[in-house]
Length: 130
Picture 1 (tube, one colour):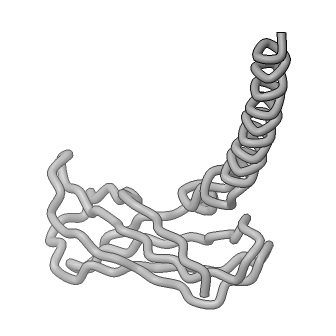
Picture 2: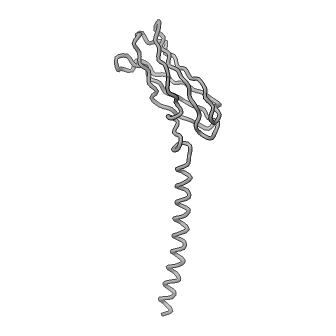
Picture 3: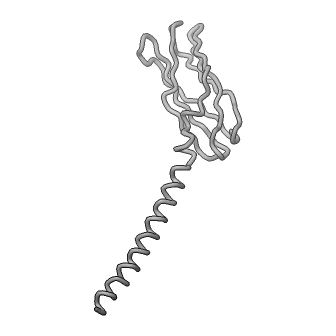
């Protein structure tokens, strides 16, 4: 009998350890789930209404970005300029020191696009703590 009780005590201790381990794992998973990268991905900071315009061999693409994260951020935005569905130029734009909730303008220019019917697309957005 002593060995059975000893077994139960050992199981209870291990059970408590396991329960504590699961609680810690759940808390860390919750913290990861609340991270700005997952709850507010950088791509969602690009506001609607960006404009693409091409005149005299210069294509411009611009709009606004709003920082939905909880920290002042630096953004790198990758942009593709396309003619008839084919990428003819790639550019990047960056914005620094965008505070939480702040909106700022962004523009990228490609001076080597020789067409007037250009489409512009954001192909990537990265946000870094400033």
